[in-house]
Image 1 (tube, one colour):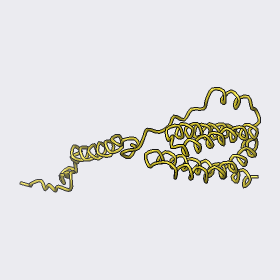
Image 2: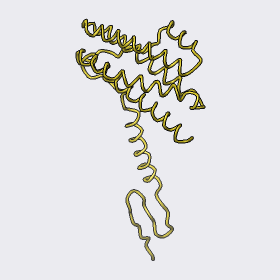
Image 3: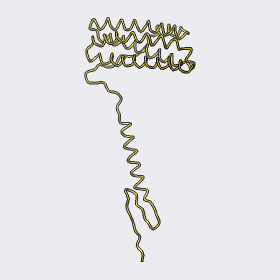
Image 4: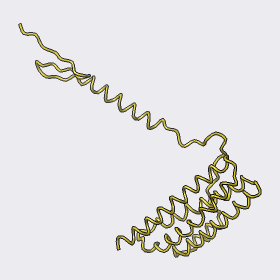
Length: 190
């Protein structure tokens, strides 16, 4: 009488007499792995503010400024107008920070941030980058001038408010990087 030889390897069980595999153990391991990875991905919290930091400023472009920006059809002229409004928002933020009115300063920085995001969104809508090329160039040069002013505003604020100014500085640097990439990417393909 022959006996069946059985061997256990990991979770799979092989029966040498007819080479069947115990799929239940393999599937259990795979499901456990999937649920572990999925719970790690979905359990992540959105970026939370450090303790003692005030809520972020609202990034909203005022209605009157929005109408004026939308009236401009040329990308370069629209960028020039947006940079002017960004400069005035930055001046208001600086004046408020000098007076220790940090909430008003953050509100002005929120307007600055909204104009920054709106201008990047406007420039990126062109399928022909050559039409917006001059706008990207002008935008990058304008943003370059804002960084030292933003740094001074951040230094005048307490850490509870300066955190958001630092985040806006990072956004300006990212926008500059994207503008340069669009500008030189277009030149490289010509």
